[in-house]
Each structure stands twice: as structure tokens, then as C-alpha cells.
Length: 369
Length: 71
Ligand code: SF4
Ligand code: SF4
Image (cartoon, rainbow over all chains, first blue to last red):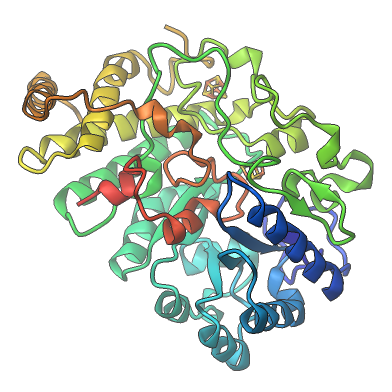
């Protein structure tokens, strides 16, 4: 991942990058880092391709660098298979960029991050949804999903917003905004909305269930001693900051942490078995199901392992809704079960009686039986 | 949305029948835990879009992804 700019044209309500500035990564540095990583992949028995993520800020604030790099890669190729990717808020696209990205669509993919509806886009991001050309993104990269961040304000209309987008053919991946103190009321509302989504998916096989309802239950009755990692930060992914310093991921870089607390790659043992262990969650039945972001843990709570207890009830809502949905949907597949369905089904059947004992209002995290 | 005892029994029977017919145990979901790029397991907390970028690059060959298994 290359941090190509510290600058962004928006100020979203849930943004955790609080040290934005007009700093940019120089072109030559970007090129030499890409060559270095390509060489590593080339000589590695473990990796066989390179994904180059352009990150910001808003990456399109440094469109000139993206253009130079992509055209350079297009003309010279690397010694290994590669793909470029950038997440964007979509508001800086103009005709010229649209034409250019279409031309280079096989080298660079753009993923759109948005809030789901015009109203939410306006209150969370202070920008009108109409200025984003959703159809363009869908048309150029039809396989690429849009990323939807679930903020408090989104909860009430969540199912409607997701279904509207999916019915237009857009792929959606949603995740909870972080660092929010969710209340029991929020969690109940969330559960209600996830149930509405489940009913809609059960009624219409053409809709792909949202990722939140699709996470498998594993080891729920027997949580592992050490927490599994949920991402490749510091192992499969390295982030180079605008000055070339490397971090496990952008969350540890100064744009999020500030200069004082930034945690360089070398200052942490990414391979350590206990890196993501939070003692408080040791016996929680949702330990393997509940996502943990080491970067956000470090940012909000000062330790890479320290999870967000403000989200426990939201995770419980996800677990209850997904477990029921998975059981329901699998029972409709009598003649079309595949091996993976069986794994999912077995796991959901183990989870169901445990989750039935829990309730949003009456249960307290960690959820221990 | 409620699940009845009948549905639980039905699913259990379906899974048993599948395993009897296919001879092998269905495999272990935990195999997928180490996947670092899958929508099902990525926390997505980073907003760095890995939750959905994986679907562009993943060919589903690990067979562990619920999304690609949805038919
Ligand atoms: S106690 Fe909360 S944060 Fe910890 S694993 Fe359980 S749900 Fe997740
Ligand atoms: S630590 Fe968090 S922000 Fe960084 S890659 Fe992992 S999930 Fe994403």
C-alpha cells in the first residue's frame, strides 16, 4: 500500500485520519517502492502477485501520480503479475478522469466508498450523492463492490438502502463505523434491519446476501487459545508512507496516529502468535466471529489487541441475525448443497443454541456460557 | 425471524445425508480463518476496501467463501 497523499477533499463524520495535510508521495519514490516489492514477490515462494493499493487521504487528490504510475506500469510491465487498486469517495471524478480510468481499467480498479443514500451521504460526508456517478463505477468495474460504512444515522434505513443498491446490480460490502459507542437501542435496531434483509434475501435468490450475514461461525463452542488475525497487516501487506517509512498498515502511520504515536513496521512483531489476543475476550463465544482491527485497536485504545467493547452488542446482533439466516437459507438448498454449505451449516447449528441464550438487552459482554 | 425445531432437524438431516452420500466429512470451516482477503473474514474495519476488493481478485477456488457459494 502506498500512501500517496495526506490530503482529502471531504471531512466524513466517522473519519479516523485526523492528521491530514497537503503532503504527497514523490513519483520516483513510488516507482522505486513498486520495483522493490515486485522483486520481493518475484523471489518469493509464498507470493505470486503484487497488489498495489493507492491510499490517502483521498487517493484521487494525487491523480497525477496514479496516472504516471499506471501508464508506466502499462508500458513496462513488472516481472510479476500485478493489479492496482484505490478506494475513492468518487467526488473528484470528471470526464477526463473517467475516460482515462476506463482506458486503464485492466490495470487499476477503483472501489467506491459511500454512505448508501443521498440523505446519509449529505449528513455523514457533507456532500451530495448526485455528484457521484454510481453507474460509471458499476459499468467500468462491475465485479467491484461499493463499500458502505454503517454509521448510527444509517441504522434506521439500512435494509432499504442496501436492497435499493443491490437491486440496481451494485455489489455492496458493509461494515460498522468504528470507535462508536453503540447503545442497546442501536443494536436492537440493527438486528431488526438485518432480519429485514434476511427476509428479502430468502424471498429473492437473485440478490447476493450482504457480507455481514455471510460470516461463518467457527469454534464458537470452543474458542481458540489465540485470536486469529483478520487481516494481513504487516505480513501480507506493507504500507509505505509518503516519506517511504513502512508501517503494517495505514492505521499505524502518522496520518492516523500523529507523528508521536505512529508505530513503524519494525517496532512490532507481526508474526507473534499472541499479537491479537485480548484477555478480556478470552472466553467470549464470539471471539472468532467478532472482527478485530489491530490498527483501530491501537488508534483508539493504545494496544493492537485491545478490542472495541463499544461494538459487542452490534456484533451480537450480527451473530444472531446471521445464524438464523444461514440456517434458513441452507434448508432451502436440499438438492443443491455443496461441501462449503455443509461446513457453514454445521457451524451454524452449533452456534444457534448458544446464541439463543443471549439477548441484546440482557446479555453482557464478554458473552460467556 | 424465528427458527423452529423442525428447521433445525431438517438442516441436520440434510447435512447428514450429504455427508453419507459424499462419503467424506464436509471439511472444516476453520480452514478459512487464515484467508486474509476474504469478505467473510476480513474485519473491513480499515475502510481500505479489502472486504470487497477480494471479490474482484478471488477466484473462489478455496471454496471457503460464502459469497461465491451463494447460488
Ligand atoms: S467480548 Fe466483545 S469484543 Fe470481545 S470477542 Fe466478545 S463481542 Fe468481541
Ligand atoms: S489492521 Fe485494521 S486497518 Fe489495518 S489492514 Fe488490518 S483490518 Fe485493515
